[in-house]
Amino acid sequence: MVPRPWAFRLAALAQRAVCCGLCSLDEQWAPAGARRLLCVTEDAPVRIRPEIAALPPYKQGKQAGTEAFKLSSNENPYEPLPAVVEALRRTVGVNRYPDATAARLRQALAVRFGVTPDEVHIGAGSVSILSQLMLAVAGPGDEIVYAWRSFEAYPGLVLVSGATPVEVPLASGARHDLDAMAAAVTDRTRAVIVCSPNNPTGPVVTQAEFEAFLAKIPSDLLVILDEAYAEFVTEPDAVDGLRKLGIADHSNVVVLRTFSKAYGLAGLRVGYAIGHRRILDAARSTAVPLSVTAQSEEAALASLEAEGELLERVRTIGQRRDRLAAALRAQGWSIPDAQGNFVWLATGEQTMDAAARFEADGCIVRPFAGDGIRISVGEEESVERVLRVAASLLAGLPADHPARG
Picture 1: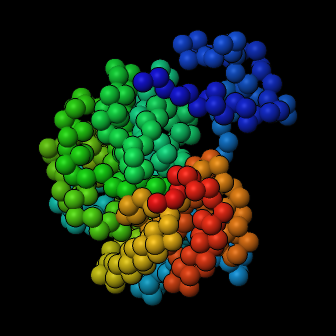
Picture 2 (picture 1 turned 30 degrees about the horizontal axis):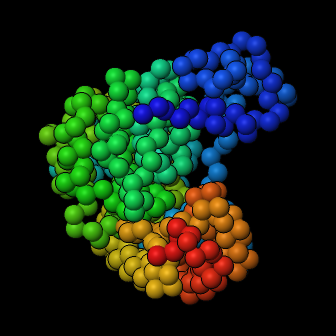
């Protein structure tokens, strides 16, 4: 499978860029006539790496006004529990640096999952650990394989590491095609990312599928299992990197989790990885020092203590998700199996117009131009409004549109 080099695909976005005359391209992946890539903007005072100059900044979900529902960022609609707020209130010594290792949180997670503290790594959100892992294993000339469409940060993080993204199209049902991903692995591949549940489409990879995939690839190839939404999963056959998959048996697998989604700490940026100590040591070596604040660690610890109450909220969100997905299917939408805290509408070329329709009715959703719309499961009051807009949208789609069930 030929990699799709994002540096070329994104170069068109750098419309005001000019070439410094010093950059060059690997002709193996260069399109006809492309010998140099735009690498600095007209007003840039220094030379910029060409792939970075062409890369747009990460675009988060659009903010919502006071009268609108923000359903664009997969955030937890519930405020933190009082115990978590109290833990934050007690953490007032901001004139001192935090513990760089987040030792107390590592210890708590190690006990919870039956590993050693050295097999736990804490980061400012799981995406920061993902970046660290890429920097640790990949560089120019290397490749990182992942499904597409998946988490929109993957392509940019791969390019920042210097490696080449290799995107493997999703299979039917908007699911990972693990056979095709295994076939995409070459001697240049340094890591594979598996996102389960897949963001933004929703389906999980099953335990059997994942173990079969591991058997097909080299045992010294890093496999990153991104489980940011694992707590919302209700599918009994879904892969579970921390409960069903032994690290000792699969030392090349690193599991990513976060406190942003189910635990409702998105604004504090704290996530974790569990995996082999040597791999996590390499990630720690690439990390920005002191990036996990004391407030983040305290809130995460308090959340673990209050996990029973928090997971009751997660069950409520999961039930709301299932009702929303069922109602959308009843309207006539084709909805992939939703196992995160969101649902996916494959609106295709009508995506941006559809997103504008949602926004006009007070629902801020996340559009992915040309592909579809991800709708986070928000407040109970948002469900009927989403369904009202969705019904109107479906009525205007062609009879043979792929979004129709």
